[in-house]
Amino acid sequence: MARKATVLIDKELCKGCELCVIACPLEGLVLSDDLNLKGYRIVRLDTDKCTGCVNCALVCPDSAISVFREPKAAKPEAT
Image (cartoon, rainbow, N blue to C red):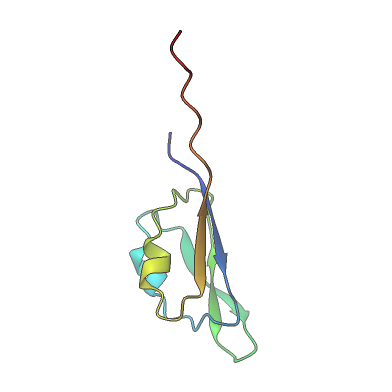
């Protein structure tokens, strides 16, 4: 099963360049119609398929994206 993650986008830092949209292998990010205070359209997470690959955060030129991965399930101990 794919590891789940949460993507947080700082709306005021996002300039809508869409580099993260291109970098997402699961096509989970989209450019929204919402505007930030500077008038830029911002990116939003469109799906819960995020695996935490962090591609979006790595390509963001403004460090507007943070990815938080859910911890892996503990393996049962052998008895």
